[in-house]
Image 1 (spheres, rainbow over the protein chains, first blue to last red):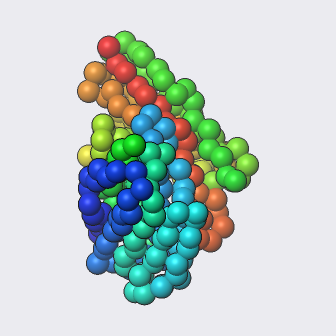
Image 2 (cartoon, rainbow over the protein chains, first blue to last red):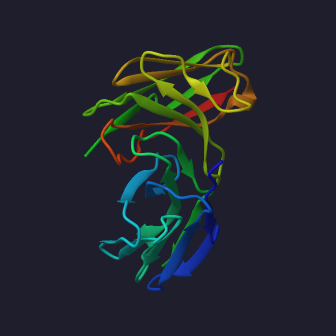
Image 3 (tube, one colour):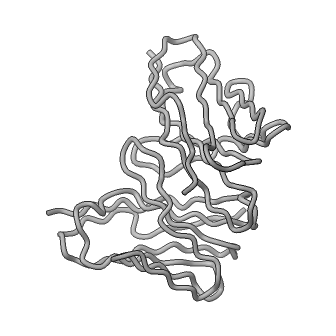
Length: 112
Length: 116
């Protein structure tokens, strides 16, 4: 069974600070996605990483896929209150949308 | 971008009644859709995988006779909570992935079910 761990599980920071969220597994994934979910809504896809070592940037968010495709990180620069939410990583065991595994999530709160 | 529509967004029903939740992929075909349950402040818990034209695959501990899933077309899957009880109250979310490679999941906006 593939399992994903996320750390930290809870994070409360002040506006303007930087933070990094980690997603780790002992399993290899064909791709890994990061989602953000706000209360009462479904998760929204932020990024998909596929290649080991890949780095993607989305404005103030930087995503990295580990060389061995077992782990990933999400770094947010100069966090804003609008970044508040539940961040979920999800690993895909194959190429066709099957066998997605979700991490437990990181709940981020950015205080103004 | 890919859009998944989930309906209704909120439903309140009486104990013992059944509730149907629809999940539609609006601009892509999804041979597989997934149904999740989410408890407050927790991650998503996969309930079942819905396969178009065949029986759904349920996760361990999920009663298939309680949570009926129908995936009759490449764009529609339904989850019916039968004989609902207050403990079934939860946030239910569906997702779908297109059949192309490296496809991420696209989620519906969820359904808040309250059983009184």
